[in-house]
Image (cartoon, rainbow over all chains, first blue to last red):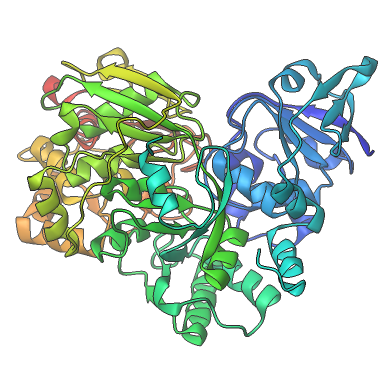
Length: 167
Length: 416
């Protein structure tokens, strides 16, 4: 289980502050995308984020535009999962389609504090925070787990097709 | 057990069992990409599928509306990437002259009641206005849809919103929409399909329904439907798209996760203050707030009827000296109607700036960017920080934007 630090934010974090619109086509390389991640919400994030870190947020995370870069820039930054009270529909899909786990847990989103050490057991469906606090979340449906394990929608369906099964 | 509208449409496009929470593989009648997202779709496609053909070129489209014509080299290049991909795969392009893609898909009769449509526009659920299941998605989703004609989708729960009572000028469908946003916030409709019912929905014109359905995205909903299709409305859609569309209704015994009643009797004009579309007040509460610019257009309020509402306020008056009023019709078809109806001349004489069709001020980077310290009143659908530049954006109806531009401060048309 990978451990990381929590980056805590509020409700309605929108895609404009996760990845500003002005970079959507000006910035295409993963390393460069990471440099602008959460730029208008938390200018310190991009410099300090470490692989395995976790975003913890309130309700409706990722609302706003359909820009996929909002999920891509967090994935490229090594964020192992986003935990939120709820997710906006397009962000939720984009994250799964790119293999970035998104976990809905009101309890964890409320309890986990900024900078707290967090580990996630995806098989068991558990978030383990400091002081041995454990928060359960419903394990992903097999289909979603399949996509996350394959690293995204397209690799998943290609794998399925190569086994001559329909997806 | 009966089915809700969304369950019926999905069931019509899948072999899988349809019930809320289930993930199904859904067939797509139309898949589209804009100049936003489109270039990445082309790049993803070439990386993942190389020269393999798309599933069906006749069901696949590019719609350019975001930065039209391109005002940066990057956008010009990106539109060329899409055009190149389209040529290679024999896909039609609604190019930079055509206007907002979601509206063009409705005008062309491609987005119809009961059909499924995806694209890279987060407001594509606007197609609910004609009973079509439209859904905005990311680049990987659309790449996959181009290749296979399918998508995965978790069947959503449905919410029934009954609208009670009516309202008069200058209150409009935008005020109704903002008031519903105030009531539902971003939670009650979150991840749900919304069915708007009630006698007063029968009177909503297509433009009105487009306004309402466009902002289900801001309610965090999946899509909104207005299933009351009476005879005049069926005729209105027929004249508009050339397609006779019949309404799909939810069954009486269908299961809804929740029901909400909203009374709009005597509703006064509404306005959403920065920086959230749900931060809604009566216009009278913010009356007198100094503004610098106004924007009328967007997929929410860019149709002939919307601009006629603005003209009703502006005719015989002038935009205040020093205030900039930017007008962007939704589509080329709307532009032609404006010419024919004399609306364009009225707008011009009032001192407004009139642009070619497209998304305009809603999209950062093209006509309508706000500077630091600038206060804008807009008929758009989002006022998030940074969405339309560094200024502050208030969201209101075309009539309120027009009136505020005449006075130079937020006001209702009745205050003039």
